Image 1 (tube, rainbow, N blue to C red):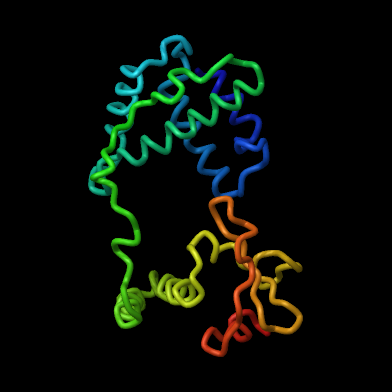
Image 2: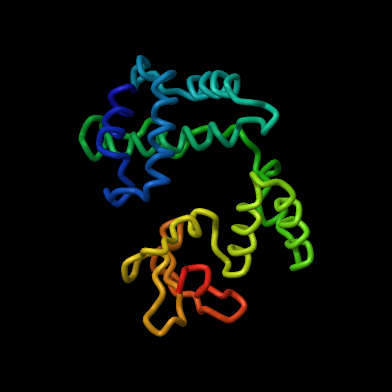
Length: 211
């Protein structure tokens, strides 16, 4: 198992199309690999069973701060990385197949999954109220502005953080020559979906981006 994970990590944690992942996703995969190696490194591939997954779950959850959740989601992300490592190992002919393909156990019921849309503010008044709380402390003031900016143009945090004031053409943060559109790059494999956002007077991107 250690060879499977290290092989994937040394290749740069490529995606299912054998392409390099975005920097933030690649970094997360690398961190997951480090944690996977702590448990799986010396375990033979032939010993990958449901019971082994359960033991990993119990071991991993024991390391997580329970005040922030049960830890089940963290384990899911770890095991997703492990599956990615196995798929890459198959392509490299390090193994012939993914163990228990299609039968990996789940440790979290869909009934307990909470989606971010359940916690979103439903109108501008609530959004400004949340921003006001963030403005109360210097350490969180920038997050308040970030939230308002994202809410105005409908970007995810990871998408907003890609924007740069020195962006080259067709890079996140680039503003078209006519000053009417902002180029963004979507997450979750949707880079080419709606990459241009209209710049209206309410957004005032000209002052935000120093134009």
